[in-house]
Image (cartoon, rainbow, N blue to C red):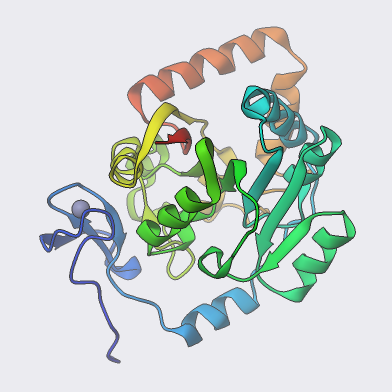
Length: 291
Ligand SMILES: [Zn+2]
């Protein structure tokens, strides 16, 4: 086996009491005995990451429902509009920021690589090419968002410190990430394909993400877990190779069906409430305020 570097302390609380997680050796998962944080003990080399991300596809599928959700979220942010600046970390092709721009926000984004940066710039988004650690800004932000990004990094403390610095006093940070305590993982165990190295390096639960935020001077507005992905279930079981996000994925077909039927929509909301209550939904959605 080749030598590689490993973490000797927790990436959230810095405790040295780590244990390897059985069933997840392939992804090098360990858990902190102090705060329960789960992360990959192995630190991927620059070469590993470059080789992985050079094949990382960009999703250009614009889901109508996702756009609707973005707009609902922007409505939540409305009362926090002061500087009028919003930043999306890892903004992809800029779908969220396009919606924000329509509502009059000054939109900023960060991404890796010329290709995505150019696509976003053409949409009128002020872009930073590279990690958020290298991002410097003259302005402060009312809102910073990060959709499915923090699971890709293994240094969440510096990330949060940077977010804290970029926000105006009482500015908001909205973040989504897979929930390690998802009902799907309990069911699929080691086959749950959210767990994948070196794609995902940190695995949060509502409890561990709250600790991370609290330790870094954020206070909770709300946190919830939502959804079960049928596409994820099928791809994890190896029964399907469908893309996670596309107009033909099972999830998208189901979402569209539910959205156009009030009874199903009511049932979905109830199921989501229950999942959230139990903390078992697939995705953590968290809104925190800078203190
Ligand atoms: Zn810890």
